[in-house]
Length: 268
Ligand code: MN
Ligand code: MN
Image 1 (tube, rainbow, N blue to C red):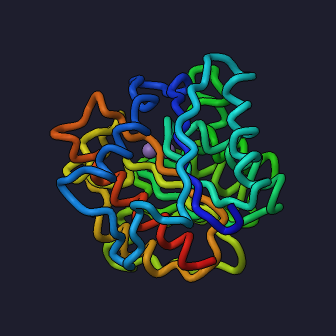
Image 2 (image 1 turned 60 degrees about the vertical axis):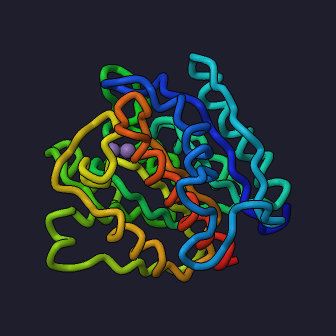
Image 3 (image 1 turned 60 degrees about the horizontal axis):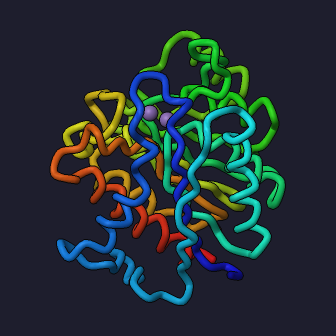
């Protein structure tokens, strides 16, 4: 599996705060990826069908409870130990914390580029420190990251601003991207965590938290396509099929699989 891309679905939505449903996403993203409605080649020319550099190890159903949830780390560890680069399909955003624990164990602190409408930096939400609103607070407390850069944010509360200042998080709010496009500029290996709700809900209605005024699909792809660093892994989270219309968000997620996945392969 050395330097190969490894797709894995993590079916977990127990740490979602508002709606459930993201646990059902991974098979629907694959279905869109291989649908006859489109083809399986990325814009950079990488074909995802019968590609010897791409493996799919299927889905992991995560039982309820802290132990089961944190066990996600061992599924990712297995991929990393075989030399693979995980492309993780969520699931809600809570899964990124155990994923990054595995990444840190294997690679040490890496840069993280985080696409989201939300900073997910809450100390806790509704008494849950593992809520999908908290994973980046946990990562920063544990020192898992070299640098955390967030793009597309448009829900910054006073608490989140304090947390960002405390942890030294670099935030590019959606309102500033209109005037100053974001150019990815990192030193060393990078991990990408992609919350689908960074998009304007017009592009991706299959999400739990509608936050109008978001990114277009093309804006996000432009950022991804400019990344020149080696990418150690990525996740695509928060697609909620229960809220989707004509599977249009499944196709957006599948597009991200192709564009992020091919970037991982081409940059290694
Ligand atoms: Mn998120
Ligand atoms: Mn979000």
